[in-house]
Each structure stands twice: as C-alpha cells, then as structure tokens.
Length: 110
Image 1 (tube, one colour):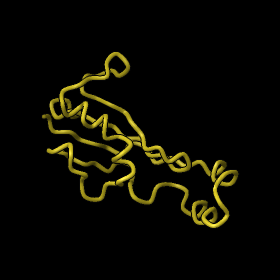
Image 2: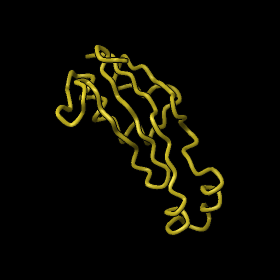
Image 3: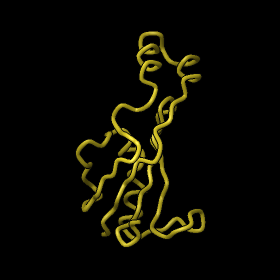
Image 4: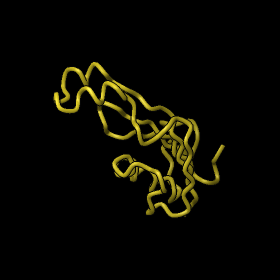
C-alpha cells in the first residue's frame, strides 16, 4: 500500500437548490452557512492506512470518496482521464454543499 494525501480543493455551495428543494426547517440555517462546515479549502490529510478515517475528516465524505482512496493507495491509476498517474479527483455527494478532493498516491505527491 502507498501513502495517500487528500487535499480539499473546493467547498461549493448551491443556494438556489437549497431554496428550491430543502425543507423549511433547515433551509435558513443552510442559507446562513452555505458551504460545508466540516472541511476547509486547502486542508490536507496524510494517510498511511487507507482504511482509517483521519481525524477531522467528514464521515459522509469519506464514504463517498473511499473507493478512489483505496484504488490510489493500491497503486491504481485513472489515466487517461487524469494528467498524472496516481491522481484522483472526487467529491462528496452533498448536492447542496459538495466538497471536491484531490487524492494523490505517495510516490506522486506534489
């Protein structure tokens, strides 16, 4: 297994979707803090064991991107879709506040 680095690239917000589809009980809170409150752009997580959720990492996001983490840690590559071997771009499935991650294999960390 390779060491893996996860970097938070983007924390996005879709207030238009929140207004249209989110329940009234939580809508105002989501509009007040439209981006993910668990992670911040630029945050990095270094993994030596791809089965262990790092401290401070969102459990929901981990479940969403874990297959890419496992593939990269095992030496997999997503070429030709990505420019570099050992790199993956993935996101959590929160349609209102998605977070985009860069996942890099240890021999390929910038």
